[in-house]
Length: 290
Ligand SMILES: Cc1cc2nc3c(=O)[nH]c(=O)nc-3n(C[C@H](O)[C@H](O)[C@H](O)COP(=O)(O)OP(=O)(O)OC[C@H]3O[C@@H](n4cnc5c(N)ncnc54)[C@H](O)[C@@H]3O)c2cc1C
Image (cartoon, rainbow, N blue to C red; front, side, top):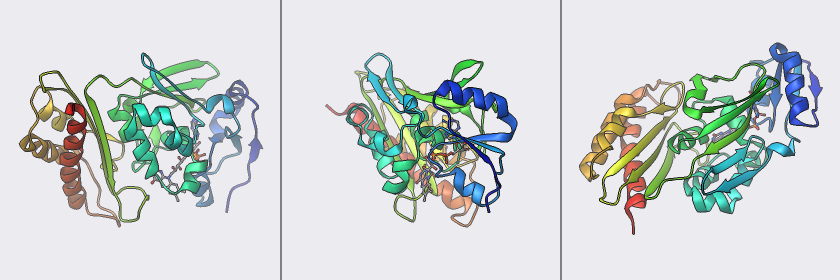
């Protein structure tokens, strides 16, 4: 049963931030409601005020330019991102991730800002976006600030957002030349959340040496985890099958998985080893083709 609350419908972001400042300790924002309503129904979250961001079209946009990269407004739905030609052309890994995120119905309502702010360790967008070097723009009545998405996550369902802040925008830098990205989750039910997931983005130089690697593990700990030992295996080298396998071993060591009804921690580590090897190879093949 959902605790009684007062529903507030701001007409602009400015109004939403003013409402949030007035009720910061006793309210939450809602957007698509695809995560929040579940936890409210379960009685895990009870608030006095709910501020609805859903109709704020000024935060529903996809912008791209070659210098600045991609900007996704927080209220942009998964479905709009999935169907965007500009996303598909410049960040095909994001399109592929969105196609496997939940059902079309959920993607039609759920938003990128809501997904990232919910901070579910099994969320799909965060590992991919972190591997692409994304940042989040946060806003409050006091002003805006930008932080890396990696730093945004502090614990399970916890972020660095203050009570009076919301996510305004996700910013993804342009990919350097000769960069490839890949993402895969392992799930038992098609388009469900992953038991674990791995995102990899790698960059090659003209001589075929790996100059940068970002490997991010999803649902392998309480927050998305950068597999830094695995990245070290790759950077500065010409990549081979042996190195892909070594990166997989290292990533399994970087993970901090739990055992639960879906999987033991050991099986999660095994999956991370296999998926990392495959995702790094897939990303490297893209980076070095042609
Ligand atoms: C059946 C089902 C299957 C799903 N499968 C997947 C899956 O495979 N992969 C996956 O990643 N996700 C999955 N999800 C989760 C879903 O994608 C997210 O719930 C959705 O994207 C959240 O966005 P929302 O707008 O609905 O957020 P809401 O539910 O409205 O809000 C979620 C949280 O974010 C906060 N919030 C919302 N917008 C903002 C904002 N702009 N700034 C600050 N805080 C904000 C709210 O206060 C709340 O705490 C699934 C959900 C369902 C119901």
